[in-house]
Image (cartoon, rainbow, N blue to C red; front, side, top):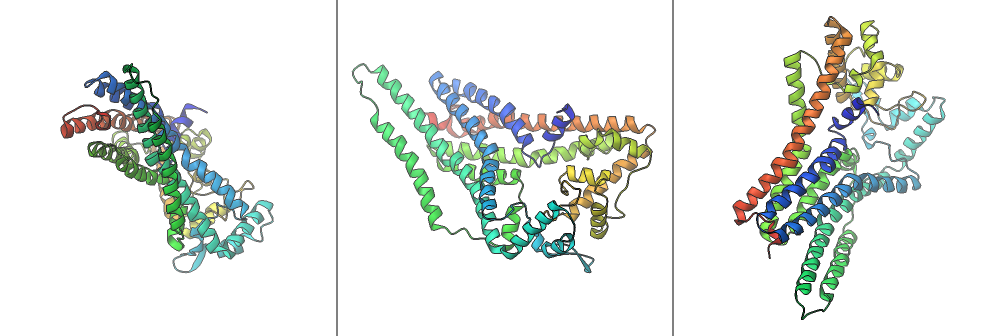
Length: 439
């Protein structure tokens, strides 16, 4: 993997890669160090407890937060497959779409009829998947709803409710063991603490299990279609909201609850909102300062064949942004640069034999916006004196913007937010130490 590939991955705010870089490589170590530094202002013993709790919290939470949803969905997809359905069939296809109110251009019935006569094993399998879902729509909707619920609820329960309690129980046990060691007269083991630890472990899962038994998860129609099309990063944002609720409700006292609310809400904003606006701002600034369109992925800007095609005026594009022209182009010219890069950007999907996957939904508005950016860059490159030099300049600026975005957002998350949190703690409690660790 080249440096451009890596920068491209961490620059995609729709994926989990920027979160992985910020969370594991930058935020966790910084937050642990700041927690220790602030708590040392009160006592070394509290600082040791804070360091241990923060280390467990940051790394275990990150592992569950980043890997829990994909892993749960993987098992859910296997279950759905065993039920005879292909989980990649998009429920949005049940809403037949039209161009200018005339001809239907995509939909489950339309796609079945359009692709059923294509002599390709892959296409026939895709059509069979569509027919299966069409004939069992309500069953398929329930399966996707349960998949969404499992992928968001299970990681949230573990991160927000189970992990904090276990972490706190460990701190209590260590403190009591230290107290016992200091007291030569009392060598009894702490059986009560062990019982509490075990009973909590069971009670949390039992409570959750009982809630699930009493709730009949049964959403259909537009709601199911909406949640089924959420990206992994969207589901992570939802689980982050649940994590906030869990951390506040499991806090050891109200002051710790206030601290957790301040920290978690700030983290949600800086993780999911701020980077998007920073990226837009940096790209707009680059357009103004350097007169270069850098809204495309750096992998596109780094493609030599693409640059040569621009130079030789051999780039083909859809006639317009109308649904009819876009569908006609991507279906008849899958090997064009536009179609290849649109697939790379996740706007469309082709099967191995070059036929568009009829199970996938095409968002025409997004595809039209992609075409506009694509066309704008081509026009800017053509107007440049040296196309290769222009493309290199655009790539370096885009890569610089991505790295700057990661740097700025990481600084806010790993430096500004933790320090602000402890200032908030000092303001509300009069102490620098974590409120839950005070004796």
